[in-house]
Length: 122
Image 1 (cartoon, rainbow, N blue to C red):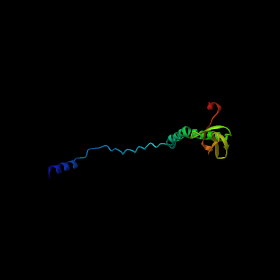
Image 2: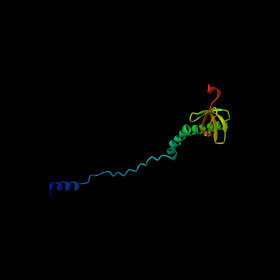
Image 3: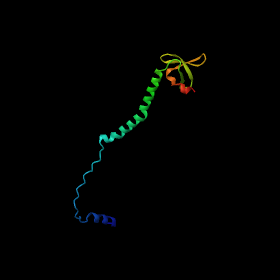
Image 4: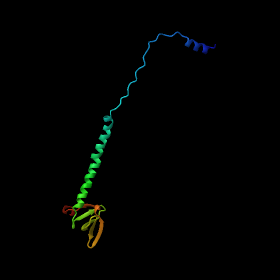
């Protein structure tokens, strides 16, 4: 036998040393988050998203609709394109604006941005 074989044989034939029997450790259960703990961050993000983005936009749309419903003939308005004119005629979806003497244009009612009040005209 060569040296390496003798060494391997010697290691396997050694007398067993008394060892203390150690029971295998019980697996540690993984921490499982509760359903509420998992959903809470998503619920908070949804609430922040609603109060900072959706709700103000809904309020702005509602205010614009009320502005359009209260338009009257003779009021000066500014369109979203920046055209200033006096309302000459109002239909369900269209408004006729007089932008100069005898110069009238027809625009969509939804394109009215603001009504010019007397303090804005100065």
